[in-house]
Length: 376
Image 1 (cartoon, helix red, strand yellow):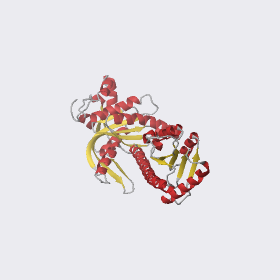
Image 2 (image 1 turned 60 degrees about the horizontal axis):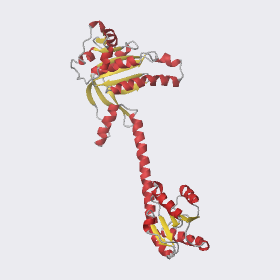
Image 3 (image 1 turned 90 degrees about the vertical axis):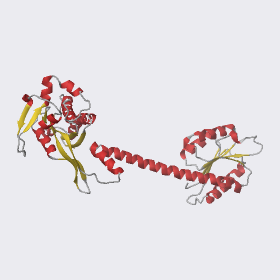
């Protein structure tokens, strides 16, 4: 509380003494509360509507009110039922000859005092109420500040989560709980799905930047929804390309086929390559800025397979087919020599195989939990 502001509503005092009485009360009470920055102020009000307007426009410290007429008491009771004013001190001043009134007639009043009580004693009664009000206001302010800070942090966390792989986020949470600020690298075997838009440069050349972004986002919405629904993860977007990862090679194949099927009537067409093998999820960068990403020949090979794929097609390596426990006729297999590879690599045109075999819809619908390496 920085300044004492008192609302005086229909006080049972003669008009000729009311102003002086309030000036003395507020001045002495302000000094007692050591509020010396600004002079105290009070509002002498007879009209309920005016009192209500003041309450909503001014930070009132307390209310002094008479107990007549009944409208005043009804107003006070209704006011204290409002969460906004529940902690606002209300003192009822009574006077002999105004009719008898018990304490339970106005249960929400904090104090009832005879108006003829010496002013010094009234100040003694009011002082602890206003101290409690000041403490409550300070507590509410601190809580409000903390809530704002927490809300900002939650929003920041939600914002950051959109820009990093789910796998990294989950591992970061684990190590944060252990009060570790470093995510150690680890090796695992996964299926890498690499997608790229062929002819994107030419496509972007004749469109406005906003239109290009909209086209990409439309396609990537399909990709991300399919990847996360299948239990996979998006490691990164690289302009017109993306790198997804799945621990289950069979689901990785299903995922690639699903993406192509959902995008077959769209303007954007991906070339998709899938490979299975060991990768390291490690940190690249420096102490100032780093990424936790997938590194290894498996990633590079998936990218190489994608480069020779026709838009709308899915080529998967023999390693993926074998690990998934699938049998695909040799007519859908081809051997390719990729740059940097000593031996040719066998790849399968799985999109054409499932389309021509009539098993496409059934294969995509088969999303049961699959054990890598099994024959199901």
